[in-house]
Figure 1 (cartoon, rainbow, N blue to C red):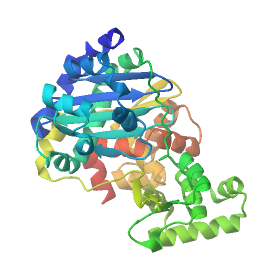
Figure 2 (cartoon, rainbow, N blue to C red):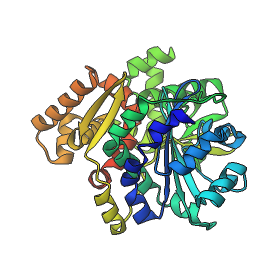
Figure 3 (cartoon, helix red, strand yellow):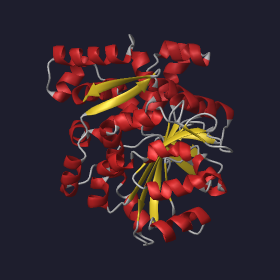
Figure 4 (cartoon, one colour):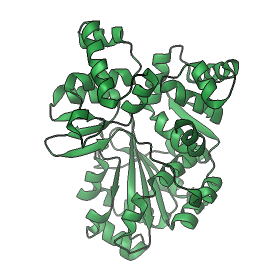
Length: 380
């Protein structure tokens, strides 16, 4: 398929970025796919031999591939369940891509899929990499930073695939959670899905989603057409269920809630902040050091430094400039300067606008995994 060739020609640069994956994790296959509206997509890979064949043979039309790309809730899945399907069987037999997993990142205007594969034909391989998700998340932040020029190039060279449909709804963002909870009573927000007392009611879930967008009680009341007193009542119930009183703690805990499907007994993480691994991956962190966070907003790219990103992270969790200063051992004036830079770069004037951008671009998770050592220390 000729229109893929400009993207496949950049594979040596992708391979250079993927060396830490192969060296530290034994992953010999990486494929980045961005699905946008209609039949358009873009891709970057370190295996042009396999991906070139995949698109030339129109394997993207395979029912199982289509089903994978249309997943709405799963943020991660292993390939075990598709092991004997034709597309995966061919990859294993002909290209030594035997096992792996895919991470899915939903955004309002597009969805990104990150495929990580290994030649290890071992039934335990997938479980091994599930335990390394934090390392893969960190690699994604590294790839989006150091590979930003590659991603920009790919965005300018979309591939149009006949017969494909990339319409994927992102149902794990607060705005869409509101719609989901309103339309289907089978879905609930849960701080701990194993404990029924931690399940939020439909109204509490809607209120929580608005809190994640940093709306005030007055603003939430207008959106939900309720009295402020009723909203305050819901907020107090939420605080009790997530066991916290301070606003910054409440918002941060809401971001690690799950979407619980009562009918099908499934749970879908909104985001997660796992404990960082021990000394074993210090070399990996050094090899995949992230310097900047690249934010795509309204067709423009803004580049945030590590300090600006960490201040944005804490600011979105509800900390004041003074509170951030105490956390990162910086003066109030220094923090204000960092936040001012963030406002200017993202071209916003209100805190609520900043939080909406952070939510839509999943910046909290991105920043956390980009700078795990710094933030792990701040959050514990």
